[in-house]
Image 1 (tube, chains in turn green, orange):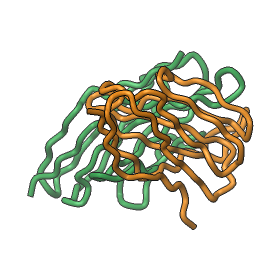
Image 2: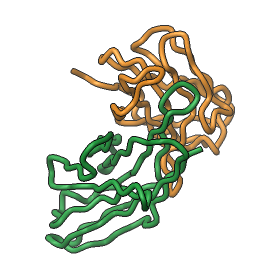
Image 3: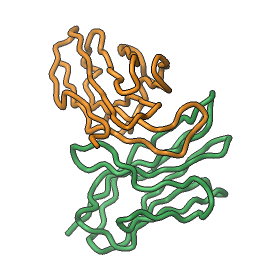
Length: 115
Length: 116
């Protein structure tokens, strides 16, 4: 079985300040890791993913996440947030189980950017 | 390219009524799934399909039925609506079939269902 923990349900941060959204996972097999973003009244959109290779992955809008196998973490960071980053962010883990890739989502972290 | 299309966007049902939430994708994805999203609980998998004619239960399947007669469509049926089924429902698809992974999901815009 696999699980995902997002410890922070809400993270308020001032505009242009840095932010880190935490994600920890557990799995007995190797995993793929994802971050999704959900803007108000919309579906989830894939933000970035880690499959293999470099442990640091980046998105096109300035977010980055680092895969840390020893700490089983995949924290999302941005050095300077904008008002438009206000959204809910979901971490997800995908692991091979029963013949296909099973995906488990975290409970989400609401990022509130304060002007 | 429409992606994943869900209809309706909003629906109010009375307890005991039945209805079908529609989901269609035009990306020739093998994998399709239904999630419900409730505050503080993240996304919970209801049912999924790894190809036409193949469906299976997820984490919270009770009270819901699915079928997959074509690659494009994956409707979700509520058999007898209950207030506990008040939620936002998302359909998601992925190129992954059996044994494949790493693609991520494409989500629809959701159906907000209220059962009174």
